[in-house]
Image (tube, rainbow, N blue to C red):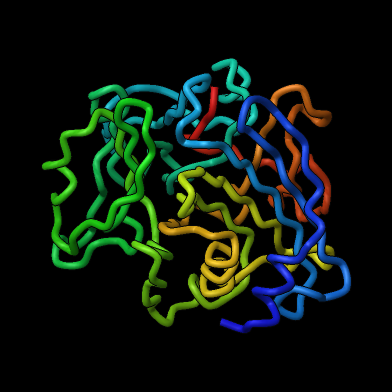
Length: 276
């Protein structure tokens, strides 16, 4: 973890907008290859986990249980969030771009919406051994097991498996050497800070204006932002942050699916994390 990059993050002049009680939108655009020797566009939703004025939740396009024979709906993050009346949202878990539906376990309000899809039970997908839970409107990041079906024992009513896990109990998690982890991409992640705040982060990528991050760089960002636990969500063309009432249909980052650095490149997804 390069100390100069940590200092750059900590000392940066973040543009901040108050969205509600203990609820802020922070953003910055490093334009001179300042951070990780790259241009970077970063947006953060920051909210106190003790804020009783809000509701945290997962939402999916439809509620059909997993059936590989049925084509599932996909919809843009901004559309799902707007239909819910959400104040803000980011894209969440990984999904099947052809048939729809999450590819990892998803439970909302006590109902299992999707289950982890395994091609080989002996080898779990890298994003199915950690997750986010919401219970009594409290958000936690959990470290699971490298064992198929571990999530079925979770009793919480709202569970999303995703990953890889980036930080846990203040420590940096070891990341496998893979192209997914080591190449720069747009990224979305969730963090719980040491002072009990939830951060939802989007990092734009795949453009000269914003290169994107490796997962090691994303972990460094989380650490510099005082995160105790941090987890990766789906990224790439899916990375989207929505804030109600903002221009461009509420899309405040620069989704990359249209290969342009604008707000119009949203990719339809299966599920989101929202704040209402």
